Length: 135
Ligand code: ATP
Image 1 (cartoon, rainbow, N blue to C red):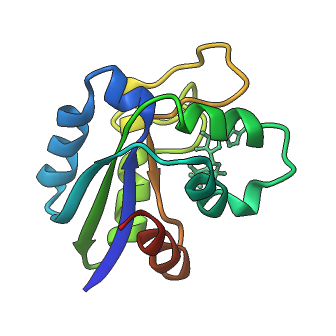
Image 2 (cartoon, rainbow, N blue to C red):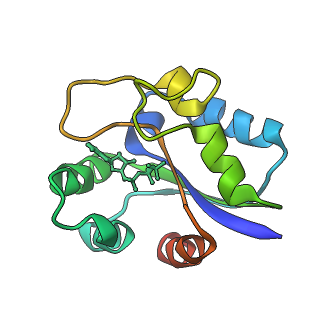
Image 3 (cartoon, helix red, strand yellow):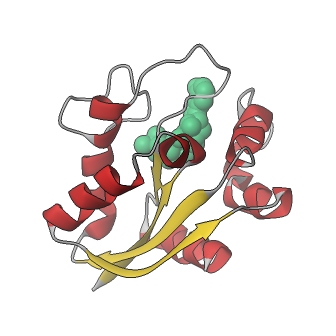
């Protein structure tokens, strides 16, 4: 069975949406293998977001991710990587489809970084790398 890293990002935790997000993940049928509240340091985030270094939103993204705790989840199930990304919706919460986590709970807050509530690994290679960083 496949595993993925899901993060409830600081906006999701601060807005009290962790339970609602976990409820959707559980209702979909995926298995929580491990879960922890994490306050990542800069080094952890630079590893996690290495592919975005140099982009205009990189520094705001790292700062945002250090603004409060995230909930890190090791999630398992057949095709869980694409399944969670489908539940999450597209990156921009303004246009993410209603019915998705980002589409139902997210919006544009006028900030330099999109606060879009969750992260999910995008491939088996990313999942292995990211799970190693957060767990
Ligand atoms: P997806 O892979 O579905 O696009 P993601 O979370 O993996 O979602 P990335 O492209 O890896 O998205 O970007 C990482 C994070 O950086 C996003 O979740 C978002 O918070 C922020 N971000 C991405 N693109 C932008 C952008 N153009 N402007 C502001 N913030 C952005």
